[in-house]
Image (tube, rainbow, N blue to C red; front, side, top):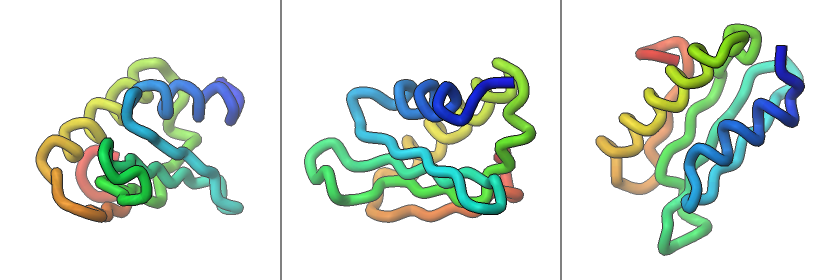
Amino acid sequence: MLSELELRSIIEGSFLPKRCECTKAEDASLTIKVYDDRDRDRVDLEVKGINADKLDSSRAICNLIAGLREDLKQTQSPAQQRVAGRGHY
C-alpha cells in the first residue's frame, strides 16, 4: 500500500500543468480539487469522499484519475462539485 504522500504525489502530478490539490480528511477519505489554468484560484473540479482504502493498486489509481479527467473534460465550467460514491469513484 502506498503512503499518503506517495498517493498525493501521483494524483496531483497526473494533472500537471494544472494545479491539483489532494487532501485527506479525518475519516480517511480524500478530496481532490483541480484548478483552472488561467485563474489559479478557481476550482474546475472538486470531488469529496473518495475512499482512499480502495486505491490499493495501480489499476484503481489509474481508474480514479481517468474518471476525474473525463469529468474535467465534460465540466469545463466553474466549481463543478462531485461526491464520491456516485459514478466511478
